[in-house]
Image 1 (cartoon, rainbow, N blue to C red):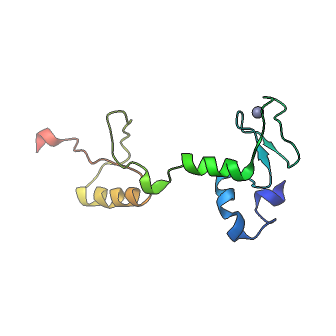
Image 2: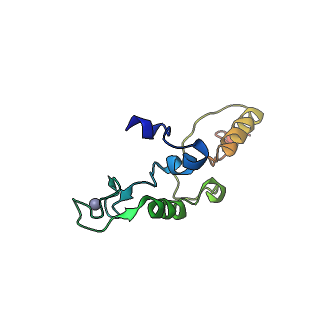
Image 3: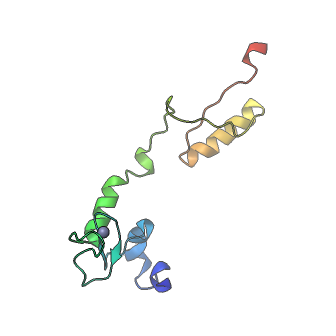
Length: 116
Ligand SMILES: [Zn+2]
C-alpha cells in the first residue's frame, strides 16, 4: 500500500502522471463510485457495473482536468471575493503577481476610493 503511494514500484518517469491523479494504471476502477480494484476484478461489488482499466480511468480524468494552462483567471460575479491583504499599491501589486504565478485570480480594490 505505502510502496505504491510513494511510487516506488515504477520509475518516476513512468508513474509521475498517474500519481498526480492518484490513479494506478495496473488497477481497475469503478466508473460509478470510483472505487479502485486490483487487476482481476471486472465488476464493482457495490455498484455491479463493469470496471474500467486504470489506463482508461486516467484518460478520462485527464480529459476532465483541463489543467492550469486553461484555468480561467477571470473573476466573475459568481466568484466569492476575499480580502486577503490591504496596503500600499506597489506592495499589493507584488502580492498579486505572486498569486498570478500560482494561477490564483485576484482583484485590486480601493477601500477608500471616495476619500481620494
Ligand atoms: Zn462502484
